[in-house]
Amino acid sequence: MRKKPSPIKAPLPRLHSDRETAEYFELHSVAEVWDRLAESQPVKLNAALAKSIGARRTQAKSPVSLRLESEQIAAAKKIAASRSVGYQTQLRMWIAEGIRRDAKRA
Image (cartoon, rainbow, N blue to C red; front, side, top):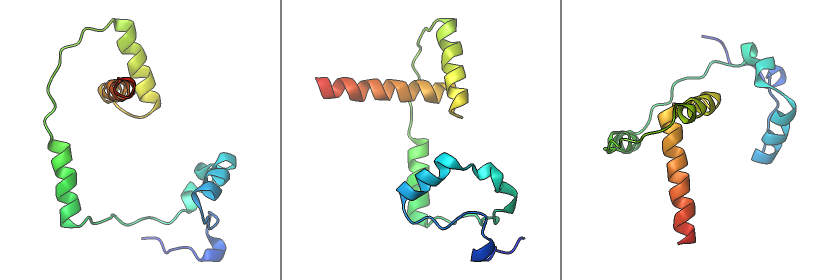
C-alpha cells in the first residue's frame, strides 16, 4: 500500500470549488499524473444506503419487444460505447428523456 503523498508533493492542486475543478480539468488531464495518485480505500456504505441501492437495482423492469433497423442498433451501440454504457441502457435513457420532454409539453 502506498503512502499518502504530502501536500507539497501532491500530484494535483487543492481545488476549492466545482468551478475551479472544471476549469483545471479543461486544461489538464488526470492521465498526466495517474501513476502518482494515492491509492484509495473502498468505501463502506451504511446499511440503510446499501439496502436502498439494492432495492433500486432489483426493481423489476418489464421486457418490451421493439423492432429497430440494424443501422439504428449499430448507431446506438456506437454511441453507447463512446459513453461507456451498454446500448440497452442508452436506449432506456433516450426513452426516459423523450417521455420527460413530452410530459412537460402535455
